[in-house]
Amino acid sequence: MAVLLQNALSAAFYYLSTLILRFADNSKQTLLNSRPQTKHRLAKWIAQNGHCSRRAAERLITAGRVNVNGIAARHTDLIDDSDRILIDDIPLLAPPPLSYMLYHKPVGIDCNNRPDDPASLHQLLKTLPLRLFAVGRLDKDSSGMLLLSNDGALCQRLMHPDYQHSKTYQVDTDKPLTADFIGQMAAGVSWQLGTNHYQSRPCQVSATGTSQFKIILTQGLHRQIRYMCKALGYRVTALKRTAIGDLPLGELAVGQYRELTAAEITDLQNINEN
Image 1 (cartoon, one colour):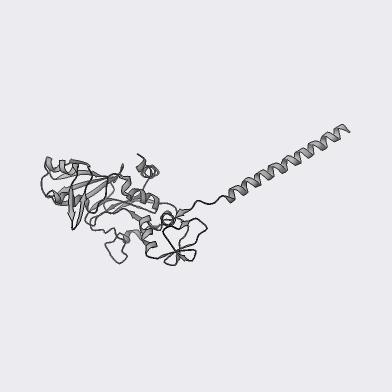
Image 2 (spheres, one colour):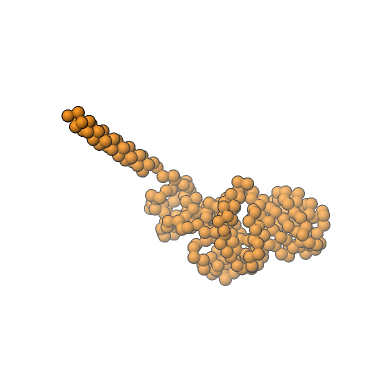
């Protein structure tokens, strides 16, 4: 009798333990499922989905071209996977895999994305398997390193002036350099366009030839190097970007592009933490 009672108690204890564990697992899963998803600002969400950069997304919102759940979008809208977003009445699809390309832009290619312009970067972008956009820009009459990606968050970090990441350029001028020119370029140069006044930050400058120099900037004002040189009586005859942070252009031929390696992507994503 005692043995039967002991077996019955063991079976009951086992059954009760199973019920408790099952209830705990279900409660945990219910709790996880009930946690709210992280919401993001609309422009950031559009950029993370690879549609365009965050700044370009902000312009789309301002222009009234974005719709969220049937209502005209606002910049303050917070978004997650449950929201339906239309851009120009076309649904914003799930984000594609992130892609990173390094492109050696030739002189004569315009970084503006104009489908009807044969000199536009659009002519290259439309041939790529994924929809990428230029991270930053280079003047049409400049050459060198241009990043192409669909990583909107990375684009924002690289382009935002607060991060002050470095970009390296090789510059040719129309006459021999002087020590005074190198010193003034490094200390900072001011210039004026119309009623707007501009001032460059101190930077690293070194002569690499009689009329050539290397400059490392931590800001990206419009045609900055050309205006800096012009303010000091020099004219730029050739300008080439050779690096962004520690990522070099290397031996990539003019007009060619390649995918970044995993190590290069990691370094680029950590560029603002160094």
